[in-house]
Amino acid sequence: MSASILIVDDDEAIRRLFEAWIEAAGMRVVQAGTRDEAYQQYTRYNVAVALVDLELGREDGLDLARQMMAGSRPIAVISVTGHGDSETVRRIEAAGCAARLEKPVDRSTLVGLVQQ
Image (tube, helix red, strand yellow):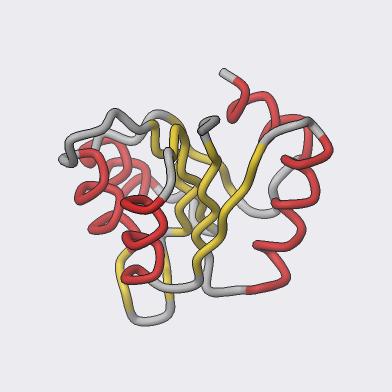
């Protein structure tokens, strides 16, 4: 089974947009709208990269990121946030995310990061 990109965001429109961009670049995508659903997708599929929104409703996306990165399979997590303040950046770096994207996200930047 080829590797997948996991998109985790509580906003379905964002998930669909990111999915269209990534699939147009020839990559396989799975989606999740909640932390629990995301972890199920991570365990079910061969996920190489996860795009994780930091604010999943009332859930913390960084908790999910740490949970997946502590798993038995290697995964690169790219955090997605609407907040670029220094405290948020510090939290992202401390969690060990491979990269971060600020909303609004640029298509070429997102696809470029995922392809790395």
